[in-house]
Length: 299
Length: 292
View 1 (tube, each protein chain N blue to C red):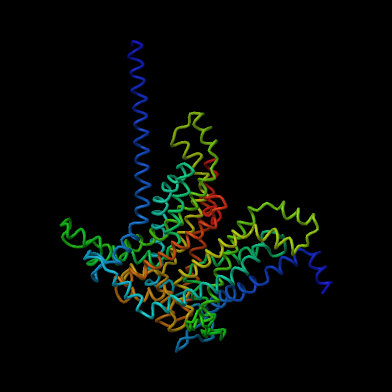
View 2: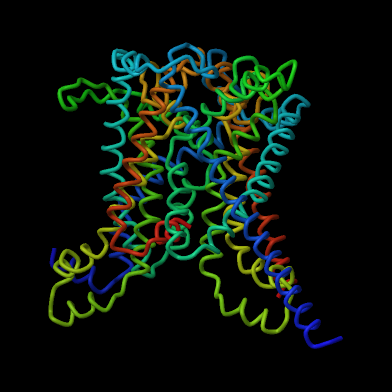
């Protein structure tokens, strides 16, 4: 074989290899795209049909905001939204304090009973929500705590929120807050705290001036997660609320059971918007840190 | 008071438990105690008007093996396994795709995964209800109007619908931990392997897969456990016919008023979950040992 023919053959081979690689890369891109389409298409279609000028959620019949007006005029939906917000805010605040203290103990101390506490803290995350829901239902019934409402004036709206619902939400949120705050504590450099102590700052001062500010992104992350989980929870709320109390997801569930209408699409779109706002907030908070840290601290 | 303070300073264990006091209180009273109450209930007889009678019995556990309930257990297990395998098959390449993008794109892609992850599960299940419904669902309506099919496809009210709903609902929970594991992977290992003329499949089998196993295990657990205990998805996409164990449990409390039996069913369900978790952990760690 002449030298020329050899080099031609070689370059053809490398061109083929290059083409094959490009084809593989292209298919891979296509796969990624399909994956994300699978995740987003159902949500996008849901939002589109919330504007449909017909009772159908399958055939497009023109644009309307009628279903949103319908939603705003439905006082049951509005009340359930206020209930959701109240439960989420109260349970987030309570679980934030309790969970952060737990995270500090678990991450900074070695003590008797730590392994047991580890298990107790992880159990509410692992256990399926239906099991936790019936556990709480039986407990509130047997203990006589019952499903008494907390009558609250929440920004001028009169709410009657069962204590049992808030107690249940705090019970699962503590664990999630503890996990997120612990992850942040584990990443934190202890040098600054040691330096503060070397400079004769007492533990109280060290905590508020050094540890707490550094821990703040973790605490905010925990708060956001707890708030979202609480706003989203259906199963535990459904079983611990007794009769006649609705949060937004509970209301949506009973609407779905009655039949599909674009009004449910409208409520769903509103909930979706809520999630987007929360993700945006978490992004703004997380901006200081590593971009991937949210995924890495969760798992 | 002063004595207490010095005691606190000298005994770190005391400090730790002081910090843990609120969480330990809350979780022991409102989680561990309820767990034990349910355990006790599962050995009692049902009362005539709901409630319980304080007679010890094993009847509730025996009943969970009645053909009717045993079949439901079997089906739930089957649905949960298929869901886990499907999310793994779809999710692993997706996680790999994200991990192999340039650092800048990765952040955006992970974020795009977080948005459905943070979106209400009920909303996401409802979205599929509007797509899959037999006569009025978007897929069947569209295919019929295009003339591609003559009668609607059986997309709704069966195991298929539930599995689709579960896969959709839990896919981010599979992708995120696998991605986290792949992201931590030391790329110099891959370079070393290809420098030593390892083929692509071999690099994957010997290096990438074993190192991503912790993510696969975590993801599988995050998908399998809630799938086995699913309540919302079968209630909405099962069309009132196809039930899973979560629905049978909830029926004991909402309709049948048989709390002891509901308690027994949930303990059997949790036992199945625990067993599956242990077996899976064992199997994957064995594989890891074999690979290395």
